[in-house]
Image (cartoon, rainbow over all chains, first blue to last red; front, side, top):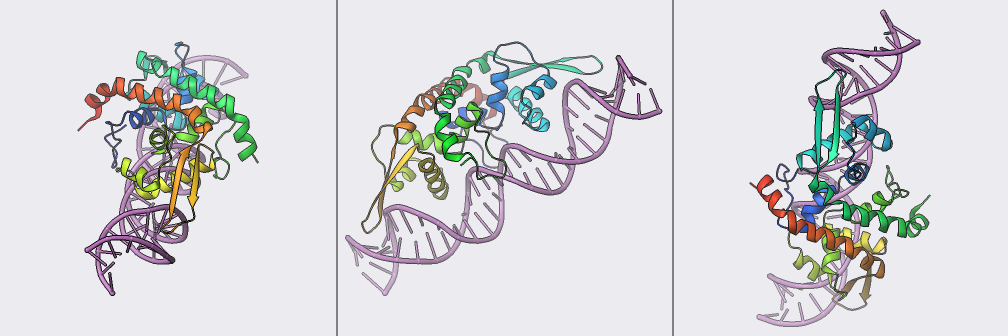
Length: 117
Length: 117
DNA sequence: TCATATACCGAAAAATTTTTCCATACCCTT
DNA sequence: AAGGGTATGGAAAAATTTTTCGGTATATGA
């Protein structure tokens, strides 16, 4: 995530650290989908976020797991089956996701008028 | 911001809307700097965020103004002088910035151990 | 047998963001 | 007149993210 980039994230800045974990296009949405705690299979997540390219969901799920916000269970079955669920660390981010969701709902009209079409 | 991109931001998704306003590298930090309400000159902002390329601060300040989160006052003087201050809309985002700041402080140790060096 | 579904991943193209460098224009101080 | 500070912006390179396309492998159902 952070230190394998050419220009590494400044982990000493709390704001940049938190942002770096969720700023990719679909990460906050993935966490929102997983919020209930019920594990979801990747195909389900894809269905819930149909506008996201499947490949990018794969990549971002992998990064969420790497960062410890989400955990993965692989069932040794065929055809393959796996499940993702939110971890306690991910759950601790949900209030932030909530407040962004709420802010977006409350102020959506401003930006629809401003930018739509 | 949103609809002048080839792949426009989905303004109907409240989460993506909110994220799109603050996800650029330094926007949340700029809002944090302006939080007190006291106007700041661009040169001051640059000094407070020395790791940011000045050019990118200019660009992101401009976008923050365009999105209505920050306002700009230009004084018709020479040498040129201008000031940026946070708007009520920007202030309404501060609780989100706060919670990200707090989360980052509380969980920094995890990621320092994990990614530093 | 053929299509579909499952999960995943490599590679390249495209889009976007960030960085870097340079330029404008004017003032003040040395 | 030279150097430094002010605010700003063009342009290209570099870095990063996202998209798109294709491939692996195996099982099930038509």
